[in-house]
Length: 273
Length: 265
Image 1: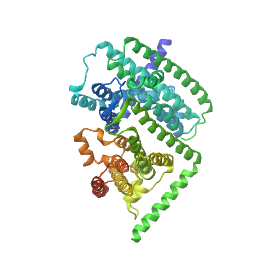
Image 2: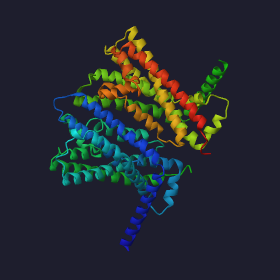
Image 3: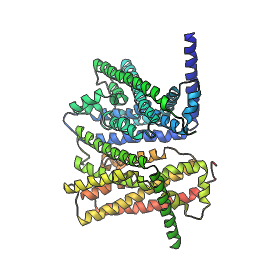
Image 4: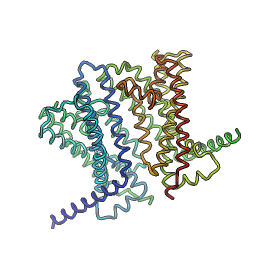
């Protein structure tokens, strides 16, 4: 009986994912523009980092920076979550009311939409990354890569995506009370993420005291951490410790999200439509 | 002349209307000014964080980079006040068929579509940018001579013209593709090219940025003018490129509108 229900739910999720794939594919022109957008800033930052005069304690070489910013768009895209834009929109335009009537959890629907979007975006992003990688292939160091590192990286990306989705989800659910959560998102998700997550400065190159803070916050795990694993500079213990921190934040925000969802649904008055 | 006055009067009326619209939601308006202030602070912190792992970048030290940031934010905020709301509205216009309606009206469509709306939400960052530049002038980082200020003003004008060209190109793209959300994001990512001095790019790319893709003139050159390191010749070249580009994109816009066969409805 229970296994029946699980398989039913699984089927519903898979069907929703397939539907989102099809919907998103119809707007694929946007994907190309989005790919350019994803690549541009990392490109600028890579150029910036290659022309700096480094501080003495900065451990990264030019090759490290190149590999780092080559991978940034890919990880950025894979761990991205659109929940924070999608959900408040659904509250405002009233489509949430419709979703709530369906025998399918609305949040799962939005999460699946986000995942489908990221996966399709990847198809449009990888050619650029491969091309850029080929162009700088003589300056990349990939000799240390092995299957174990790649598996760790994959796991780190999954966890990073999860924690980002849960944080974005928690912020977006505040949309039950606030009409506009973009400022909250800007501070909690965008701003601190850009500063301490590894976008502007790779976390490993921070001075010791800033690095410690960055490693304790969840933001590093959404971007810098998977790339740090690929570069092979982390020991097994450091990797496992990273997973533990990331899991801790995921669990915390899963609980927060659940709490806000239950409270929010009670105040939701279903306007718009 | 009379026609031009009439167009200006129409635009002023439209601005008044969009101000009134914004004031209707006064709380949200105040909120977005605060949000933009935070945006500015985070941008500022980014440079601070950057310089924890770098000493100087392509010959620019952290003070000079702050001048660049101040100029960048100034240009960006001006763009946000005058052009951005129109760009956002444009995607809708094409999609809903309202563009057709506007094209039938006896007004200059390019002018009205470009300056129909205005948004004062970026007042937060524009004032903060001015405070930052003022502080850098007091500190002596910015050269305050008649020449440098004059050069700066000319280069800012060229910068605004170039941004307008980019804006117009995106408008053409919106008409051409008949659907373009996230245009604002596209504009934003173009701006990311200007956040760091053009000197960081490899020489071939730098040449491009000074000629065919005149990114250099948007923030780097005006900042260099304030620092007293830009030559008058360079700034005049920028102005000439900006005027040529404005002319060319206007032509392109006219051709696009002529080829437009209506969409949506």
